[in-house]
Image (cartoon, rainbow, N blue to C red; front, side, top):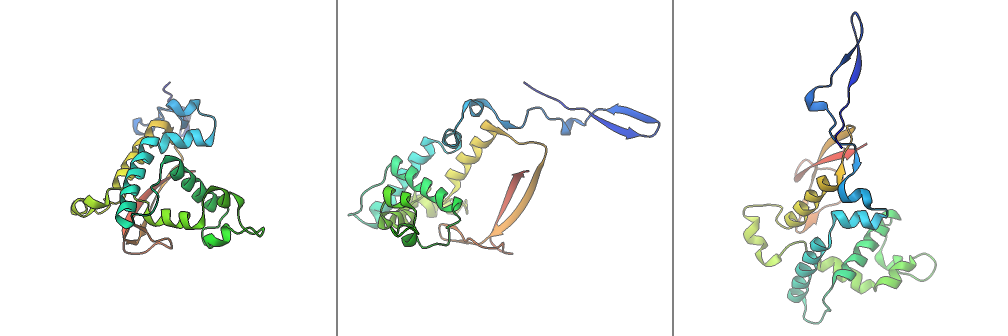
Length: 204
């Protein structure tokens, strides 16, 4: 259902209703919309934005990289990719991004049990080295036209899902930051004067 807002302004001669300009009218309530309003758990919401179709394509591209890298390693699948994603989320939640992965898997009370239960240290490191979001074989050709060819397919698919299931409120902030890019991904660290400019929209 569409909604519009009117504001009351204090002007000379007393109070009067002033209709909000057309460019500032809220036509949808902020928050989840469509299928998102029916979901109740974080994983259900997550699956709307990062769909199995997106993940299946990453599996295909990653297995291609595994074949190029070695013939002896086992190919990955959708379940393992989701497990890897979950472990990376846990690393972020626990603020352990700068901790050695070997320490996270220790069985001395200092590690995280879920890491030991999900996969070995060697497999975790191997997947981080081989995971790909695009077809590496055709990347050089695509890079001639698109400098973000390594992440473009995932980036467009994910961003295409955002307006389908979420409406931001009127309290948003636009921010931009430059990140250095080396090889596959962005360098983690402070903003730089050179690199790829990333424009972000934040919900307060």
